[in-house]
Image (cartoon, rainbow, N blue to C red; front, side, top):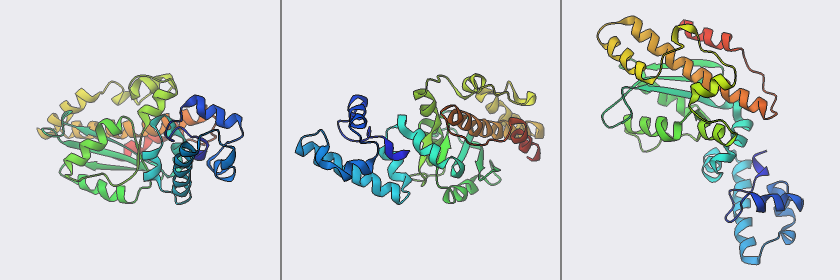
Length: 261
């Protein structure tokens, strides 16, 4: 699955990839087995085979850091599909969009069929321990926002785990808009109690919480938890639509996990 794309190789676009597959090069090993049949000049062939060999070595070693960096975002669905059950999905809430004058209030993660929550001035930094236990991080808009925000907030040079941005997987599969828009397209409905909560209200909830409103704290936590659970569900539903037979819990069963917060 992961080894059935060549779009990460220099000079290879969709047309060249289709040509390779027409010639019977269906995976990376095919190229290494029949290098003399590759439709490239000697210099280009050498460069192509070097990338293919490095990619295959990374695949055999399960080096997801290399693969997520090497493969273009439009092909990251391959990594997600192969490691869906092992992935750690996460979402964050913050006091604003800039990590230089804002901070993280809640982090929720769905890891190995368990829901984890990390809360401001309670256990927020414990999220990094979960990252250390994770093989692959997945978030919606994570590369643009969540990952760099957390790196700056925790004052670390890098999050330390390979990560995939689900937003771009959806984008290249024809889905546009934010997570809530895509949820509706896939037939998901959030619990009524937080159905209308958005990022702006999440900031207001935090402010109310800091003024002593324990109900606002609980609502903010449940909103973040719901975000990460719908991230997981939308990813699974997309993969099912792409032909992967992954069993998924019902939305109702997943959302019931937030009752224990």
